[in-house]
Image 1 (cartoon, rainbow, N blue to C red):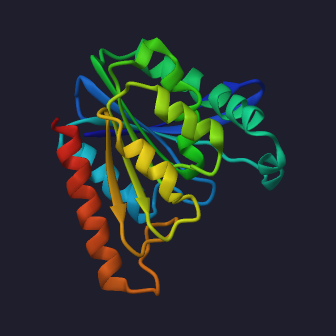
Image 2 (image 1 turned 90 degrees about the vertical axis):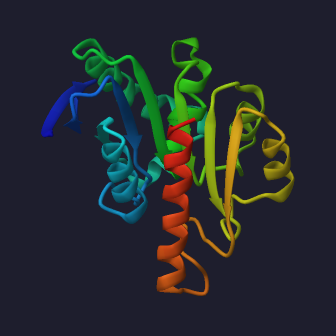
Image 3 (image 1 turned 60 degrees about the vertical axis):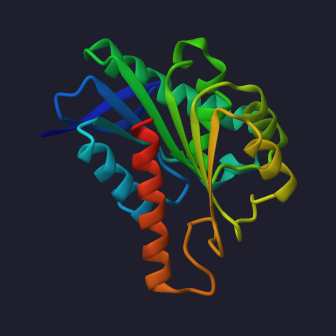
Length: 214
């Protein structure tokens, strides 16, 4: 296994990414949350699960100032998509990958749902959406329209857990749903319970591993 740290200049801005190579024909691109980075539990163990399945992994290290979140969702989508697309294209151009998987958490689900899922280029890619931002109607509506094979993981105490939207999404045959009882937006169990939080992550990783094998 080789771990390469790389930098791409995009619109005069440096965007860093980590490319973990297993010699696989499958690559998983990962998009972090606003404050939930790749060393946090969900990404750490998701990365381990990908490597366990012999996938290559690309972690994109974008970062944004807080005022990004004052912008309309369309503008946020455009900014993040413009940062991640050149890296995706660079990796795919220089490698012999036959399959792609995309995994994002929270903010990182925006370029997947409102960007990549709207492209026929990735119609056969698997999409893993950890705590998607379902309060945004356009994200919810896109999920209802798309036909990609997808796994959604969300905590029942997450502010973005909206029962009517969850029920509508669950009726989609292409979408698998993992609802975590008493879990917040970080998928930690409330009131804070260390052992139950670890157990919930174990269940999520088992579901993720099963989804990759479908």
